[in-house]
Image (tube, rainbow, N blue to C red; front, side):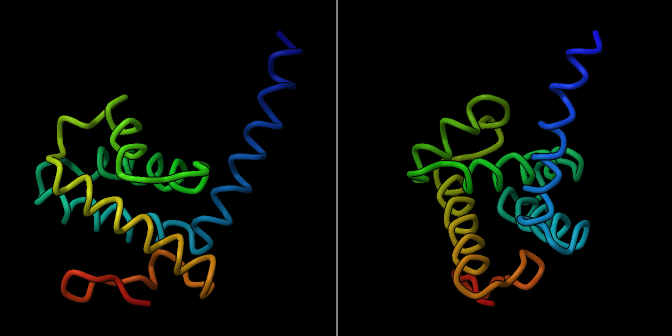
Length: 122
């Protein structure tokens, strides 16, 4: 049992580091992504479920070498695709792609990315 807990700590440390780099403003950034998912899904899910989708989707968008709509759809199929139609999957993909661009290119956090019509700006 002690061996298992030793393996778990490095994984937890790695997840904490990834989370800090993806959501540098913590809850403020997580809430921003959650709010956008609730908006994309037109309030069809509760906040807890939206936060779950937010965390998992942002992580997969960063970890995938080729993150396209089909990759996102395959990811969502594992636990929540039933909430999305094809247009909403595309909107989520566009948002996650905008987040990646804002963070990698302009060092903006998710809470600094906002919707402007059909586009995202920072």
